Length: 344
Ligand SMILES: NC(=O)c1ccc[n+]([C@@H]2O[C@H](COP(=O)([O-])OP(=O)(O)OC[C@H]3O[C@@H](n4cnc5c(N)ncnc54)[C@H](OP(=O)(O)O)[C@@H]3O)[C@@H](O)[C@H]2O)c1
Image 1 (cartoon, rainbow, N blue to C red):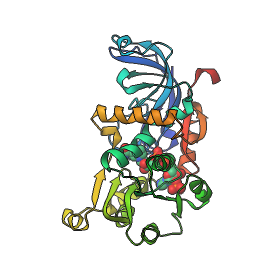
Image 2: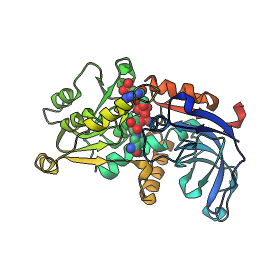
Image 3: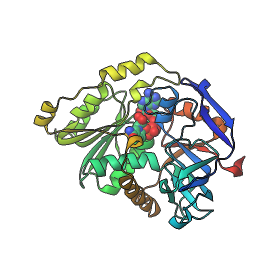
Image 4: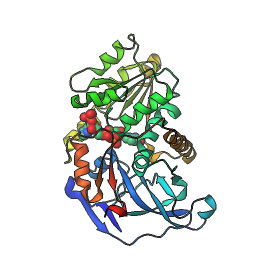
């Protein structure tokens, strides 16, 4: 089987495609023939050596896949999986591969009407947004939300979940040329290059601010997201995209992001009644909480309340072009890799 491998930290020259023997599923595992693998912004940061935690190089990235179960490890049959099942999996790492072994408990059967594209676009983005808003954030009908990278993977997922959950308003920041796309998702578009999102959020919530601010940018930007909150509001610090400058690693840019990220003072937070959550789904330990949320997301997918926006599907041999597309801020929704045997 062939897999995409990061051989070292760096630009696109750090990517290779290697051939290796197909692994056998151990007890409690299944072997999946991968059809689609989701690309996440974290994969780009890992390639540049700007993400933690990551396995030692060389390694195969890829948190999420959809595909077909081809072999069952010992004890899996009793859990209800059969060979030929179409599944989505939060495989954790190694998803950029033609085949992968995953713990069966990390796999979820797909309803008939769900495509491999929709399934692979679901786990990371929707789970992260859902987890922040509902599990951590005690989201209530009528709450307002501020989300950045609004046209991206997590951004588009947030817009749909907000609608399903009954949000009053979603403010979405993105690049100028994505205005129509962001509006089409029902968000109040804020031009990240030309507008002050704190001012817009305050002005359009009677001076109060938003209930939830989702910040994947970091640096100074994070304090501005905090300022956009109302009393009782919650900030979710869940990324540091400000560390990335193009496809090549820039240590200066990364350091600037780290050094300008605010150190929150609990006493000031106390008097302003605001909360800050640090969020990293990759290191989240409680499998029960994840499972429950994935089941409810698959249900929402099945009945059409959510419908992942897939922008582009690249063959896996074009992985560098696929990642460059995201570096160039071109994506509107999710970008996937096609590993399916049919289109070889
Ligand atoms: N903590 C977690 O568990 C977790 C889970 C999932 C995602 N995340 C984080 O959430 C963010 C969004 O993830 P995603 O996978 O859905 O990606 P994404 O938002 O689809 O990423 C691409 C978009 O990000 C925006 N962007 C902002 N800074 C950028 C930069 N330096 N280089 C290129 N694009 C940049 C661009 O849109 P505009 O130009 O329109 O802004 C671009 O189109 C990332 O920071 C990611 O690390 C965290």
